[in-house]
Amino acid sequence: MSNCIANSLLKKGKTVLYQTAPVLLETVINNKMDKNINSDFYKNVLESDLLIIDDLGTECINSMKLSELFTILNTRLLNLNSKVTKTIISTNLNINNIFNNYEERIGSRIAGYYEIYYFFGEDLRFKR
Image (cartoon, rainbow, N blue to C red; front, top):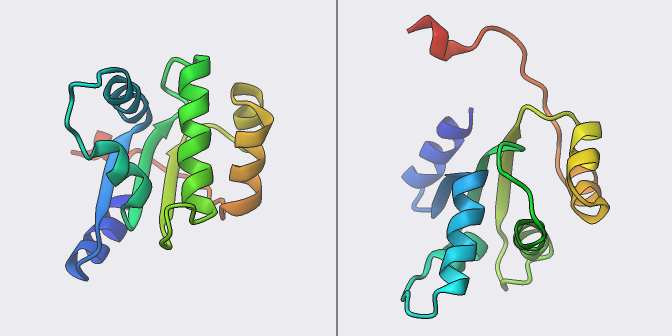
């Protein structure tokens, strides 16, 4: 579903960034820690028209990652980047797991600002 949405927006000239939660958070932290890296990655995370965070809940959690996840979600939700941006989060966690795994301010933003859809059925990757 996320890929279909991304492709549709790309055809309309929108910017889309698709990344797994573990890679996204590791890359953000590595870019911030290494001052020698000349990268627009973090700017793209905050300002892309659509950010797709895949597999939230599969990353190893620490305080830096929680802080970065909060900043990313909050910046995009409140348009602190001076533009309207949208975010899709895919996860196998239910809302209770999100509150258990993440701090309340992250859980409350996900529960309060995102529409939650549940998908059921066979994993299409097993049908190939």
